[in-house]
Length: 169
Image (cartoon, rainbow, N blue to C red; front, side, top):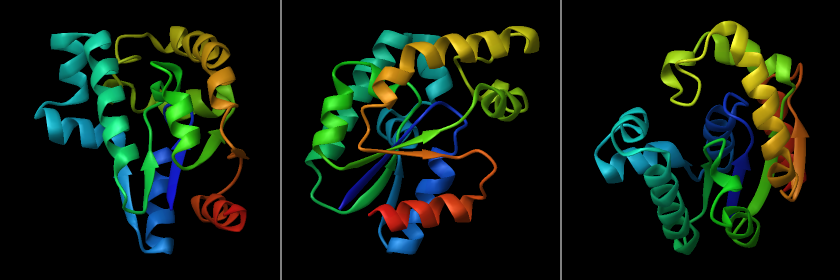
């Protein structure tokens, strides 16, 4: 079984993937970590040195590689992964896809404290961040909504979200 978590950055994909994988006794894979391991460079530096297009091409390449993998795992995608290179079709055809849906305010509150670790928002002022999130969500939501399931994460603990996913599958 492959469970694929998608949603905007800071929606909790990696945290939930780890909890879910532990509950199911299967591997948890974070796509960004997988890319970093295979490329030998951080995502931040890939963006800085090689650009977003290079990153998106590698992201698609490694997503295809994982889709071919016969092992069971929970995969946490990057926030933009479903939106490029027909990745959403690859995602929905190769596993149980779950959109972790969060409000603009929740995402803003989470991202404001971790901006420096997020290449797409690292250089934005706090006042521009909320506008950026709203614009991005508007563009990305149609891709996220193609997931087979949607879980709203507002005011839920990671244990509650994990339980809700376990009940779905």
